[in-house]
Image (tube, rainbow, N blue to C red; front, side, top):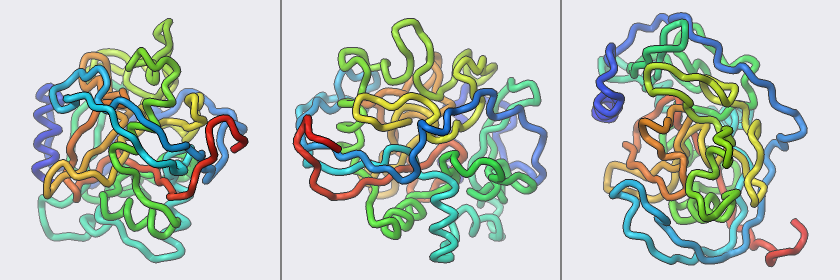
Amino acid sequence: MRGALALLCAASLALPGCKQAPDETPDQPATARASCLPKSFVAGRFIPLPGGSFLKGADPLYPEEAPSMQLRVSGFQIQSHEVTNDQFAAFVQATGHVTDAEKAATSDDPAAGSALFLRDEDGRNGRWVLRKGATWRAPEGKGSSITGKGRHPVVHVTLADARAYATWAGGRLPTEEEWEYAASTGLPDGANRFSGAVDDAGKPRANHWQGVFPVVDEGKDGFSGTAPAACFPADRNGVHDLIGNVWEWTDSPADDAHMIIKGGSWLCAANFCARYRPAARQPQENDFSSNHIGFRIIRDVAAPAPGTAR
């Protein structure tokens, strides 16, 4: 966990104050300035995707996205939205699962905690901290809660937490190839790798950072943190938020200690990261958690042929 936070600090343009943070929760800027239509969200809905081929690593931007290669995947069903706080709460109530971040909150290890991106009250000057007590129940640390945020994606979950939920829910985490297949075939414009994030006029289609990261988030998309699931329009497949909002765990290893996460998050900006694209990939420590990493699940159910009713 400490190593992952060090990488975040180094990658965040030498942000000030990137260190273990106290338990107290400072005032944070409002996380939402936009409302979502209730009809856009159907909890637990799965979208069948027929098997097919796609170009993995299409139009690579960073070295780790190459080489491009044509791949074929079998059909599956993908949850139309990221796993929400309400869904995860039902899992915890049924199983008694304790997340790794919750275990870290009671640990004597000074390096224990979950990563948290903080800003000043005016929303400026972002920095990463490692905070004990930052958990899925208390996303900003001690004193915070998910009250009124049941539809937001669950965060502060490690790979093990995500796998445990997936098994309980009768599914699994997608492989990197399955995730990228779903995201790339759903792009509004298959020839434009950024079309999942912004439209032709530059208007946000997903929850990401507008402005100069980490100095100021202009909030043109209506949010300065996570957005409720399915707040932004679905892609061509009927799936929401594969691009932006929170990074999503996959079940594909980068090496023995890291898995691949996909999709970018509300912290991805044009001047930094730019990983709000299907081909973008990032290795993440298996035991790492933060307030910008979540997940969704898929199911191995035969999908209908293209053009048939779903």
